[in-house]
Amino acid sequence: MINFNVPPYVEKSVDYIKKAIANRKICGDGEFTKLCSQWFEQKIKAPRVLLTTSGTTALEMAAILCDIQPGDEVIMPSYTFCSTANAFVQRGAKIIFVDIRPDTMNIDETKIEAAITEKTKAIVPVHYAGVSCEMDKITAIAKKHNLFVVEDAAQGVMSTYKNKSLGTISDFGCYSFHETKNYSMGEGGAIVVNNPKYIEKAEIIREKGTNRSQFWRGQVDKYTWIEYGSSFLPSELNAAYLWGQLEVAEEINNNRLANWNIYYTKLKPLQGKGLIDLPFIPSDCIHNAHMFYIKVKDIEERTDLIAFLKSKDVGSVFHYVPLHSAPAGLKYGMFSGKDIYTTKESERLLRLPMYYGLTSAEVDYVCDCVFEFYVKYV
Image 1 (cartoon, rainbow, N blue to C red):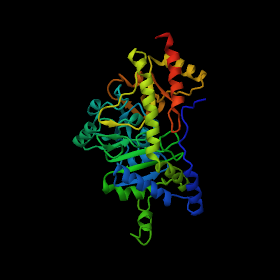
Image 2 (cartoon, rainbow, N blue to C red):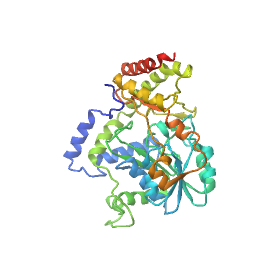
Image 3 (cartoon, one colour):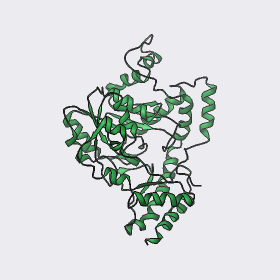
């Protein structure tokens, strides 16, 4: 069976986990947490990167830092994971969903301004599949209306927009290191704080509302409860697992990109015949091969193709069900404008196997199976 996903693993991670145990320091902010944070700060050129327990809690921290209050409105695409919305719903916000672009599956930047009201507090672009949203236009809109921008870059580690790392182009960026991501700590994430004036507050929120980080740096002689916070620190064991991957981050990235390119090249003839659509990468974006998806005719054809691939021992899956049509989406949000592409395109999208260690021979086999399914149309 060629699984849809296999969590990334490198042997050194086991050694680092053992070292964390030997250090007798397995709670947060130990040696490996600091190594991971420093690696990101240097790699993406960010003032501060703080590891969190998940991409979800990174978003929750961002919502607190944006001072989201009950009644505030937050704009985002409906085509995203529920965590994007939950982080702001938890603060009492109303979610305003807008349509996506069919080419990248990202928020349609031309639809954002019409969704802004006097209650709007933030815009949350989601970089789908590690391909950037049109950030120049989004940040310009935010500046014009004095809004926060929080990048949901859960899938965007190692991707760039106009030579800027995803997660660094706005007020706050949020990464995920879930087992389905390019780099994983099982469950984990990180918040990127791009405005230095929020660094101290971010550290306090992350440390249960205390100034413990300042205490450990010797800036205060004791630490105390300063304001609201929570326990957002991941275990050192998780950070140690992640550190092993960050040491070979380029190798992992190159392996995924090589397989992505094989998929694209081999399946392009099917696109040429009008049978499927392939991913689109804007010229000013560099992506990280987070996923490889195809778009088929409709949901019925997708269901048939998933079943066919399964019969060939190939795991394939669809992705998000649009949030605005979900029970919680109806309760906590509303769709601004018309749903022209969100539902239609979501029902066409099918993800093929993609993970570190997937072999070129396995990618060839998956492509052969897709061709076999479409042989009746060729």
